[in-house]
Amino acid sequence: MGQPLEWGRRYLMVRPDHFRIDYVINPYMSTQDQPDPELALKQWDALQQAIVDAGGEVEVLAQRPDSPDMVYAMNLGLATAEGRAMLSHMRFEPRRKESLTAADWFVGHGFDLDRTGSDDVGPHFESGDAFVFGDSLVVGYGPRSEAEALKHLATQWDIRVRGLRIAHEGMYHLDLPFCPVDSTTAMIYPPAFDAASQTELAGIVPNPIVLTDEEAFAFSGNSLVVNETIIMPACSPRLHDIFTGMGLRVVLVDLSEFHKGGGSARCMTNPLDFPLTAITAAGGELHLPV
Ligand code: ARG
Image (cartoon, rainbow, N blue to C red; front, side):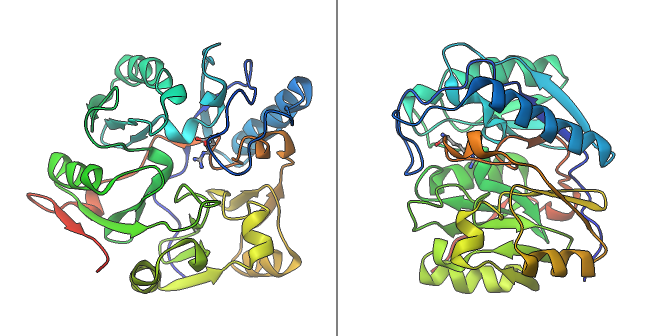
């Protein structure tokens, strides 16, 4: 077991006032299966309350009426404890207006803003693909973020970046098959990655909790740790034993309405306090799987 995570106490969330399925950009979405707005708001409130009860802080941003996926705030931008933010440059056009509002929010809250591109110019980067873990920023690429964006992150911020190539259409962001639990422990779902990246991942995570297919597709990997609490949309008895054995309190929050858009607890919460201290590398370092 490792040390508690240094981050995960401050989040940005977007209230689901205009949450719908208007288009299909992942295998979970269907315009025939719309979320119930009242139930979605109730579930969102329960998630926010669970974070506050665990001792975390939540900032709330209003949803743009023209951006139904904005509730998945994890993708608004990668924000650091040092006050830097890398805005997302969304892969799919219908999500790009979210970045206009996110940019204003980050700047208005004192973040020094950077971006990998905009309006389809420059590499795509979606922050649901990025986590500080161990000695590096671990970034998933392929379905959404592009390798060029990882290079930009490394050189702009003088940090060590380790890329993992995602090769599974149901696991299109890193926050679905990878979830840091403490400084050396993470939930992982290896079939999400290509062979070289699975090997790389084994080197990145000293204490892996390998998810079964059933756990991964119930969005268990899309959980968040806030102090001594792990907030999860679903938890098998096996995972429950593992986490309580680590001294964590498991809190379950039903997020069924948000699963219809292909996201869960982690996707709905953007950490604002990733520390860059342990991953600093002068000039930047990029490690891609070979
Ligand atoms: N419908 C959204 C999309 O496909 C879901 C985003 C889920 N967010 C996440 N961080 N995995 O972009």
